[in-house]
Length: 392
Image (cartoon, rainbow, N blue to C red; front, side):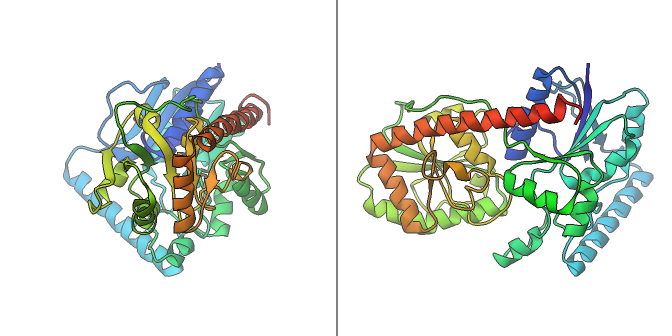
């Protein structure tokens, strides 16, 4: 049996955010293809005792017991992080290993005393230093999730300070070159990575189960529901503030029936209660009911990089999706066929009103979404087999 170790700065269970959902579904695919899977959660956290689904062995960096040694280690770590932040602010980007903790190597050495892996896969390029612990007998894979070069400049351009990892081309290339194979999440990023590394790059988009929820609307509510699912990050917050301030007033003025805007996820915690049309659901482990009851799913994203996983989820549930050109990146073949794109408040509101008033158009988009995702997932499975089932 092939054995794989996955290292990530998050626990994928529960899978209630885009990156966690992606990793969970990759794990399911690996399990279906006969892999035994170990998982290493690389952030310090209280011990997780419950059984993690699909995982043979779950490892983590545990918080140490309180002592003088622990106190000084915490103080030293805080000073190190402060120094890294100051230096990254001065130079305008992080170095590739700024987020890497040497405690990961110590824990990994303990693991490798008893385990041999045919494959190792890390989530995000900033963990790439860990790959130096493995020899050529282990296939080393980076699941990139996103491009991190220039992210700081992108956020600054839109008036925000990017507080998470962001780097430059040179450092991103250093990280990528530590792997044998690089997984991109969309073709645009595959082409980008191929320009800065000679290592093979293959796209595996967001793999997800198809749910044929087209034409299925809950009869419990007389309101037509417009759904947004997302975390509380700055991109989502900015997107929803834009929608509420610019698009919602147009809908209220022109819509002749009852509707509400359902917000699901931690986005609920950062959006003010200023409009009665906003219905905050909160964080849910299972999104089936909210997708079933939704007439339309929206993602009015204004900036950002990477594949918008919330768009994939909407389409995989055969729901009408309305997004922006930014949100359509990586899904260009489906524009105005499987989903609608609108880049101004007037156009966004017009798309929503058209779908809500035209059942034929709605059913056409739902059917096209399902067909589009069938083809999308077929390509993902093909590329998955190239990486994990062949001697690439």
